[in-house]
Amino acid sequence: MKNKKHIIADGLFTVITLTVVFLVNLLLVELYDTKTMTPMIFVLGVFLVSWRTQGYGFGIVASLISVLAVNWAFTYPYWSFDLISPECISSAVVMLIVSTMTGALTTRLKQQEKLKAEAEKERMRGNLLRAVSHDLRTPLTSIYGSCSAIIENFDNIPQEKQLLLLKDMQSDSQWLNRMVENLLSVTRVDADKVRLSKRSVVLEELIDALLVRFHKHYPNHKIQVQIPEDFVSIPMDPVLIQQVLMNLLENAVFHAHGMQNLWLRVILKNNKAVFSVEDDGCGISADRMEHLFTGLLDSEAPADSTRSNMGIGLSVCRTIVKAHGGELKAGNRPQGGAAFSFALEMEETEHVEQ
Image (cartoon, rainbow, N blue to C red; front, side, top):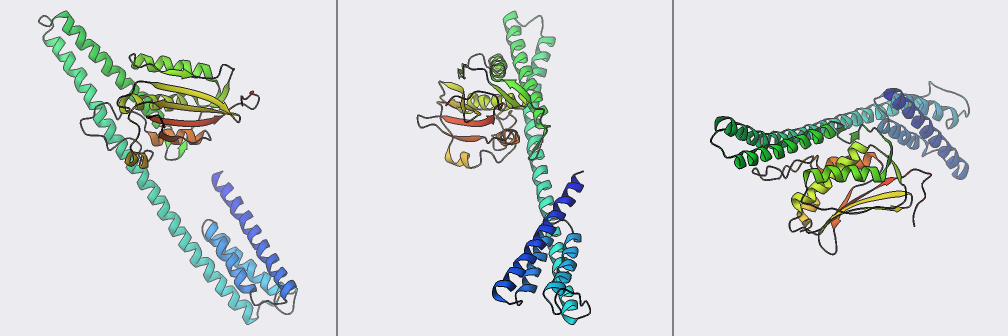
């Protein structure tokens, strides 16, 4: 199906390009009574077709059609074919050479771009695997150590100490569970392509579910929520959008040093719901801002960082938002702290506040 669409698109481009070239030549002949530019203009058209379309086929077809058009409309005797003339043969040879060389060049360039994209994809996978292996090993080691301590010294460990070890195991298990959730989100993101399962989601229900999930993991952090009082329904993939918001909130918890306040706001503007996560912490440094969305995970995190690198990554968050037709933006608040925002289209029937 995809190849068929490409063929149709390339065919339409070829027809439109050659039609425009033919009409331009007719116009030049009508206005200036000259045909000196005709072969060069057709050669340009053949070059554009060979450069824009896939493979060699359309470029060769464009070359043959151009030769026939020049011979028929712009070579004496006009409006008739003289296919054995030296001009016709030389034009055919030149245009075929142009189309073949251009097709070969563009095919090679496209192959290089494909190889580059595959290399980038493998780099992202490598970063993910390195981060995951490190982040999984640390809590698993902690859980194993706590279990071993309780089993081997059950009668000698005070109940309070056992309870403390069990709480640590619970915390590490919750962390591993979030990692699995994040990985499930990542598996739905392939480079710049995201498999969406969109449906109409009530904003209040989305935020309530997000807050329950956040406070379950971070009971000591309070979020100041500001959302419209009106009923708002937004077409989205709720799992992925909730994961994006969760990741932005977790980033504030881990990276916004000195944070006292954390805000989650949603405002309605121009039939869009604008989501923003803001904090009053240390903000984002200029050097980090430059590379904020370039990696799948924060591969520059220090080796002893056990929990600052567990999110699905801002680059993946941006890809998810982009797949929904929005753009994830980052910046620093004038009052201090960081701010992340993105906008999603609402249902057409919704009333929008000005």
